Image (cartoon, rainbow over all chains, first blue to last red; front, top):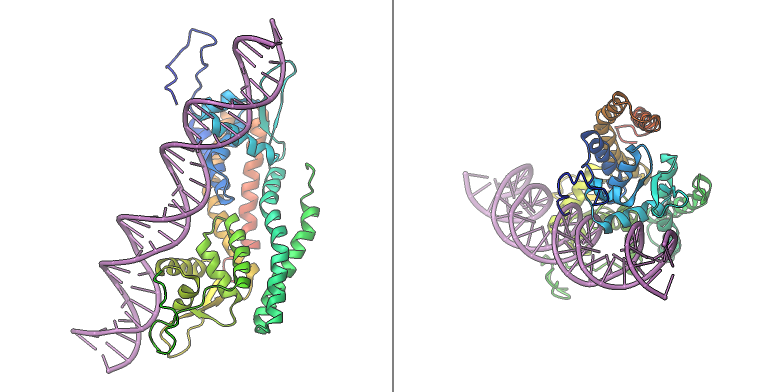
Length: 173
Length: 173
DNA sequence: CTGATGTTTCAATAAATTTTGAACCTAGGC
DNA sequence: GCCTAGGTTCAAAATTTATTGAAACATCAG
């Protein structure tokens, strides 16, 4: 936000001033942003993940904020999102105050967790509604074609719910 | 939009006036809207699909607009979207002027087509960028951990691209 | 306990997306 | 050709979603 007083070089401790993203970092970020977009994950979140992904070691809050030129609020919310979806983990060194973040080992597992958190609740919530819609249609003697469709939809939903815990186990992978 | 002049019953030909959605129809629409939301498909599109899905026969433009209480523009765009993604097909009767729409036989195939249209372009577009990011990292002697991550990302992307045409064949299913 | 650092919250604002509706095409009947 | 039912386009308006930043909160060193 505030123009970081170019080269506060000499002094220590006075607002570290971070480099903006390098071209190759931007390229990777674009990729993650694009993929995230498909699942409706906000740009800021994808950017944070990309930065952690391409960085050598874990990064702390200020680093992330500085390098991405992002508000505190966004960084906080972004980290929360990534934490909640088990896509990053904190490597707090003993005796240190701040947390430092790095991506979870398996990107695959991360994506699975993300998908699960979006799809599962929808399926669960839908279950009774779908059954009700079908029952209703049957009772009102709807066209066989419609009944057939609704029946299949219900089967799908049930099967998806049965399979979910197998493919996407609640604890980490 | 315009309050449809309640019960223009007697007269033929004067704006047919359609019923609003019934509770069971709303319930199904909610389900589709929710699922569509995950993929970033707009509400109006999901509603159109739901209506076609729960209706006995194919519906024409005016029916859809009337029952959903939606603008012409939205119906037109929604049908275009669904057409483009092979989720509906038109059943134009011979000698009839208007087209009538019904859902494609397989919802599964529809979803696959939809997914493909979103994911594939992203993967394709990303390919060169990802390779470049990796090459760049290697050349700059980045940390092995980072190289490893980027390598895996590249492998994923390639594999996904190879598999895509097998799992999601371009022609209809 | 106190002060300072580090983080979260959330109302206000900005940005992106969706919907509307009126003007504009287009094909077919006459 | 001319007219009209049927449909599309697209700029403006409405709605939704994301971001910001200041204030509140939490935790730890001293």
